[in-house]
Length: 363
Ligand SMILES: *Cc1c(COP(=O)(O)O)cnc(C)c1O
Image 1: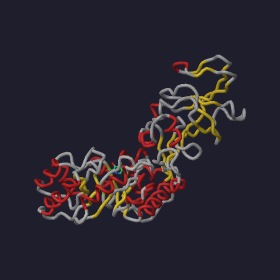
Image 2 (image 1 turned 90 degrees about the horizontal axis):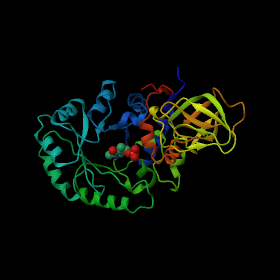
Image 3 (image 1 turned 135 degrees about the horizontal axis):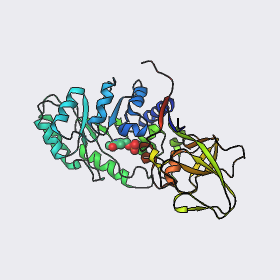
Image 4 (image 1 turned 45 degrees about the horizontal axis):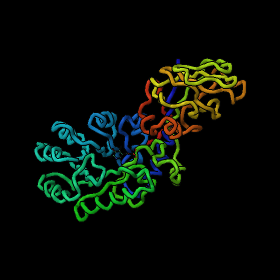
């Protein structure tokens, strides 16, 4: 079998969740949308269920397998219902949909059967979804008219929480509280970046995603602070399945983008962009071979990529273990080199075996 694997450390996931919960000082939803950012939503939710206050997914189809596999905690649908039938399903399965615009609120008012609780999204400046802060009292009046609904959770989402120097987050917090102050219900503001950088964004419910998986969402240059204690959850690994030597002047791979300036020892690694490794990662992107850091060279192909073995001892060659990201090379470093964010790399992983490791917790 091709030796390419994503190993998911469920103990690290739980440690990161506990860190998030400590930072939040409040109930904390584990965001497991997009198959838990590529880590396997069912396995991750089962590992977290004894600790977690609840979960969040993007939409109904992501919540169904969690309920089917026995997850009983609250589950928030971050995009809410797409049609009236979904509100009924949410009611049936005790899912908490977000309501973020007029059409969704109408749907809720007309629904024959409603979920027990909804989350109302307030647009505090990101200008994607959400009611204007000044509309909140009116939304509350309309909710009050609906029998069987508990007071909502008022939520908002930040555009720039990853930038500790931006003034936008404080402005968003101000606008949000300006809209919902005095209304019954609870609040939810913080994503991962806000938990790490903005203690002012505390509320009754936090919503960390990437932090659970060990990604640091803060822009480079920000103080690592609590992010320094995050543990990587996914290790993406493969092996060197062939080696070759390039003489000075010889080219490597598609586009001949890498030309050896001196003799170069090349390792071919059995993973490529069809597995989710970013094709845009340039020569120089860090990679670990036999536990030592070296660099990617040449263009990433669909099924393989090439690494520089020249700086490593001669006996590191055929069969050597390769870590694309994980303990030795962080997914954030690879993302930065490839001009993207860890979120995208993690949720694109596919075609490799996925193994979950960790101590079984007895509930
Ligand atoms: C995805 C998402 C989150 C989690 O964001 P992270 O940056 O991964 O912590 C929180 N809130 C909402 C509304 C989201 O869509």
